Image 1 (cartoon, helix red, strand yellow):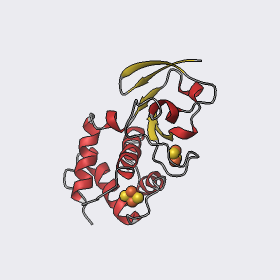
Image 2 (tube, rainbow, N blue to C red):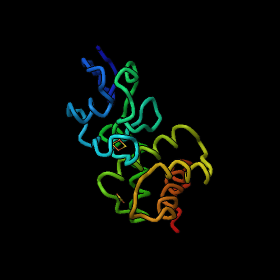
Image 3 (cartoon, rainbow, N blue to C red):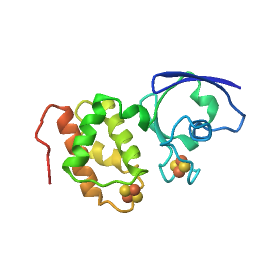
Length: 161
Ligand code: FES
Ligand code: FES
């Protein structure tokens, strides 16, 4: 089947097989180095992207659902002004995330900033709970997430805890 979608601002046209998932397209056809096919069933988050602004595990998205959508991977996110705020927050809190978690948590925060101008603490916690990191305390992730939101709201003093 013919699939057309936008990836990081670029028009992509491919022919997909019936059982293909978005991760097969992005990782399998080398459109993105940040998308990894690891667990393959929506648990690890290593295949996360934004699809029409929402974070999705691309291994769970059938290719036909990608049609006419806008997909942003880590490679696209790091070109945006939002990402600069996210990066400042990670540095402020000295978060040393691995190469799987950093893209995923950044995409999660970017989607939260897009969806709500003033996300509550509960919304930040819920958003970050989608991250499957086994080595960073949730409190540290939350504090960094709160700082991202504060920076976005123009409160330039990072909220360090
Ligand atoms: S590969 Fe693990 S969630 Fe997609
Ligand atoms: S930073 Fe990746 S598993 Fe914790």
